Image (cartoon, rainbow over all chains, first blue to last red; front, side, top):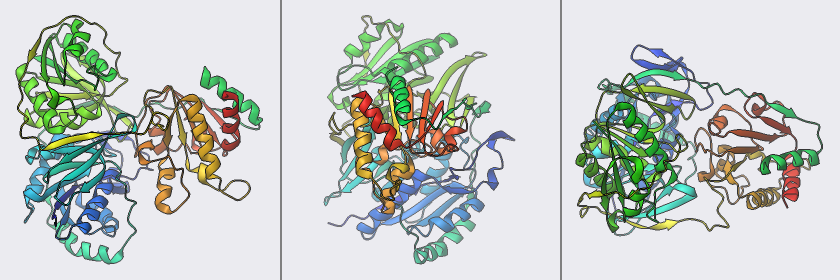
Length: 269
Length: 336
């Protein structure tokens, strides 16, 4: 039996993890210093969600993948030049801040409204994918709120594996405490899945897919609607980078036995 | 105003330590605001859990039954909504367990409120609740408040003392219809006790970096020796195992891998941020994305062959410059 899915992946951009980040006051609250100058990447967990979506769509002919992204479209365009080579998808853009200091509820509201505006989206076939965390706000809350706003009450977070049965049932492995998984089964779409890492490697670049994607995605970037994230009373009184410097004692040119003995005393102590 | 402490029971119908910590935070918040405290419990059988915290001075509400034994978004959010409504909660405080981290954000939408998760602190300033949490993966901490109510919050473990105070209580039962829930829980998959290497409650975290799989002085890799050395240490100390992203990603690059490492072991910018008392980093550098994962590790030591690696830049307490293969082998011998 064939199962067609309409897979919507929510994913935004984050500063390259190797960049040094520092906060500063902006007109509407805290921002990152030189935020628009920082190199950006697709959020790692959203990336996993996108690769799982593409894999699932490839296994189920007739399925479609949309990547819905809230972010400044100039930065999104840069990132999408690379991401578009990884997997086939249709980009849908809401032009607004991707800052980690934005309110999660406002972000969710914008994403839900953007998804509702996708032409041809069949809610009965919808699998809403995204990261269970992000490298920006890291709340692990936005996907649940988007799902609720779309009326989707079968939800899973920290997903590493999704198996679709012949009858369309979805078997999901979710991370729980202590390195364990909870296995759940939902009878069919629609469902929300916040992905952890999944079990797929990052796909190699495919310039042909990249060209096909960008033919559709450049117009999507140009047609991006401005996102209004102002409906929050969230007020920051401080954002600080913690003092983390330690007085490191560097032990070198010391015999292995002595190092091991010191370590064992520390471990037992 | 009512502050609702929301918790779920564990499989033995008790409350997890992180729930008891969240109760301390909720009670402190309610006391600071001069408002009522309510407790809402969800689980198969909540009587024992209620009694274990009966001394907190709250009014108790409960959603109980076999359909609430397992963690399911749909049934948990329905229970949380019913409990919040029953006590007219304006602030909801819950532990950031995997179960409630999954369910509670949706509660904010149902209540037309707002949610802030993974809080690291909760205070009262000028009569207003003020929260703290980390942004950009433990790289900066923000202090904030908001006017919207209900305000739903989850608190990370280790941010408050666990509440103690058992007493008999009367629990007001709250009915919830979950007949329309389409998800069924098929079970828990976990490795055996002997094979378990992720131990959140362990005293020590051992982090393995990519150096364990690189060519050694003889020009060859010795992944089999690395596996044995690491596993012997974990077995001997019952430590928890973490990994750098570069090591778990090696599988995707076709490199030799340490067989028992998965993405679940990953710590750092794109992994977990564990809270063990001690941490020992082996064969990995102390660059910023790694250190993010060490934010809550109190005592930090590292073994690296490079004396000028990132760990030497004030990020660990002691850096041993040496061969981790040799040092850890000797450590294992001394540990017996």
